[in-house]
Amino acid sequence: MNEEIQMILDMAEEQMTASITHLEKAFIKIRAGKANPVMLSSVTVDYYGAQTPLSQVANVNTPDARTLVVQPWEKNLLGEIEKSIINSNLGFNPMNNGDIIIINVPPLTEERRRDLAKQAKSESEDAKIGIRSARQEANKELKKLEISEDLLKNAESDVQDLTDKFITKVENALSVKEAEIMKV
Image (tube, rainbow, N blue to C red; front, side, top):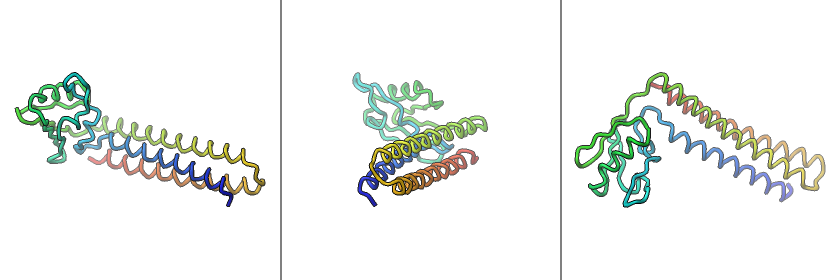
């Protein structure tokens, strides 16, 4: 096979893999009932005048499936961390016991589960769009090459096979995430 064609295929595969990676990161942020330290990844704390990610000023642990524990490295940050968690609009009600902050993760309501499933579906659609645009870009690059019609058709077929493979990965990831969200 032509080196240029292989390079275009590799580039398309790289872009499609990036879409899958982005989807996996987005799915991690969609909570599925279990407590996970990633739930607090968007929280920033005012640390000596600078907005700093929570993970850089405290340890976040999950002692059980329904509880998050935030243990700041400096005791004087307890109030600031608590305020930041409340202001982050994550729906958590942190409790401060003087040493650590305990957050009970409430069980999801049926309506909230449906909303999260819609959010997961939306993220998977975004990933599919990324994959399709990688396919479109690859096909455009292939058409620029001066190769025979048969070679072009074969290369476009390879790009389509790659696209189908990655779309299937997205659909599988979505079905797993939806099952995880809807499980009570």
